[in-house]
Length: 117
Image 1 (cartoon, one colour):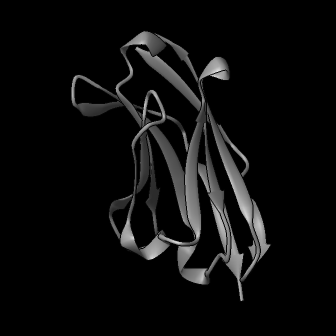
Image 2: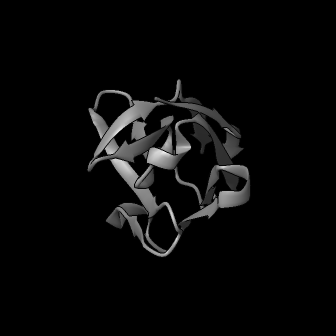
């Protein structure tokens, strides 16, 4: 099992930036990919971004392309989500997840991101 702890959320004005971090511990050798998901009020949890364990492959949902970037620091077992040009519709609770054997099985508690107008 992998334990995940997110940090870096907060309140920011529209157009601002935040950097989320996710520290992984436990069975990190089993991780294939790391991802970020968010739950927006009134909607189901949605995929935001993912990165392979080696950092060689990334994926971003269309609504954040050009604004968000995902990166990994393997030496520290940490994944970052750099969020720029934030919009009010980016408000939500952001969750880090670890994939093993092709599925996201381990989840963090989440960190709240609030973007004000």
